[in-house]
Length: 466
Image (cartoon, rainbow, N blue to C red):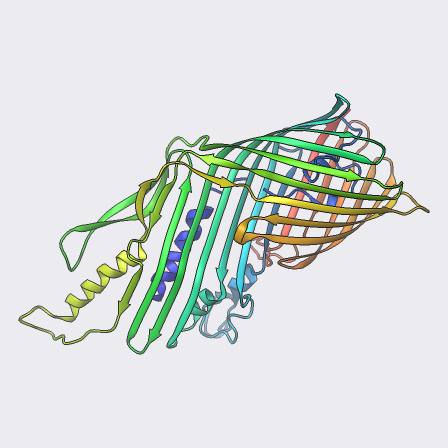
């Protein structure tokens, strides 16, 4: 029975992440890098003196993962290797591990993945300021799991597990953005972007109020699973099965089908930003990004119809009974109840729904050395507002422009999930721009090249300037 509830959680994760495409916050390590062409993605008030056109699909690529648990917590060194097992690795549920839960947070365990690919982009000076045009493909997926879920997975003893709620969300869309920034006076510069959003797919999956009570011979499970999927052509594949102990049949979801994927919703969003320079050496900036929504055309809803299941053993049974009250008969009855509790069932399309974007806020302070103006320091506060998946970050950076065509910097960061380092190298000779950077160093990876920590990022881009 424990296997059933763990498998249900795995199914929820697979459904949510099935349509993650290529939504990162941009390269925050480059917020204070003057030659970085995509500062406007971090604050729309930040223009520059450089006209540019992105090389299609290569102008600005960002991929980021974040979380407080990762691969190294799930996959462990096998304590039985090599004497009793030929496998070097095992899962955290291996009963021979001395401390299987050491890598998990005692409260919430979170992991997320964001990505952005700039399909087309350009920036140019006109109309009294700096203007940008962009087409970006964005994706963001987040998972939030309680500690009790992992304790339940490894503990076979009698106990009450108040597992709580499980949350999974994935949002995928294409944005078409037009931006403009300009100087108001010698101290103030403002900017804004308007965005048309074309929704591709959105998943919002929850398992609410999950409990498991294991006392003696009695199992009591409770959980309310709900899945909202919005995507053009999305349909659940269902299978019919006969009840074992009663007449009739029930349907359950065993796969999904996407027929004619395309635009599944439309929305609008805006970015707002401002920069204040009180003197030559100090600069204060702030931006609110992705203030908007997407209205989806469909809402494919699935749920487990029976929220509770109790098994208290077999009573008054025998090998043969004139009343048919055998152990097999009772197990058939319980098997029907488990199926109703465990399996998600298609409740049909509930019509359109509206989801909000994960808004972002960046606040930065920059100081330039009066004695050597090629070096400046910056402090950036970044917050992402996404409900139960909200997180915040502080980043202290040092930036250097040794040559007119070369600049970059390094930084230290501490956020909701970890502490780490970031960097940016930006090369921009006449006619060309290329940059590489990371907001989080990747660190060690497995032999399959999977980062052992869930905190990692990479950004790069190639652009033509004129």
